[in-house]
Image (cartoon, rainbow, N blue to C red):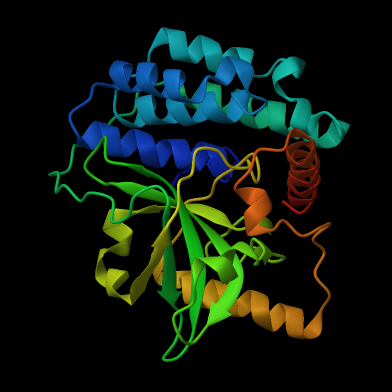
Length: 294
């Protein structure tokens, strides 16, 4: 994904933005137009992932030969302490992060000698709609129930955000049973470098196409609101869902889960600020632990 030995592109948020940037670029958008769109979508000025968002945008513009002075200034600002709150609890990690960003800035000040060329666009729309309740086949007998919380088709590769439950079934289940289940929790990073935490992910249609037939429809629900399960949304690999879930189930056969509390599907489908605060606190704890193991 990147050529640095630093952690700039090892960060999930930065890497996700780079993926989105590249897709928009292949769709014909100019680097400045992409920056404007991503800045509107992510609102980095109101986000504690400010530095991660701007390094992702800057990397995209540099790779595509269109780095703006405006973007460079934003990345330079991201070394300020107010934008590094997630790192400030540990002075060594904070200084390391500042150095990573500073090295990154020095690198992108020199234009890339071979800017990325656009690839031919093949349009693939999202496979599911917001509110679809689905079963995903894991092996010859077993399925897992999941809920689609968003769909987007603004570029050549549609996407769905999918939240997984802990309800596994062999015969078709019902929405009534799913509402009594909990959101599936990952104690391990897994084959696709997921966050530990309550399992949701963005899946791109292009990645899903070859194995989309392993999905069975269960029901539809009206999702007008739902809980934010965490600060970061990893990009999922549809082809590794079975392996990832099996890794977690194998882990639970030998270990006790570290999750702090259950989040039921019924709870997930209703906004609750106090529960969201608890989820954010847990997400920050996991983020800090991940930094300590880098």
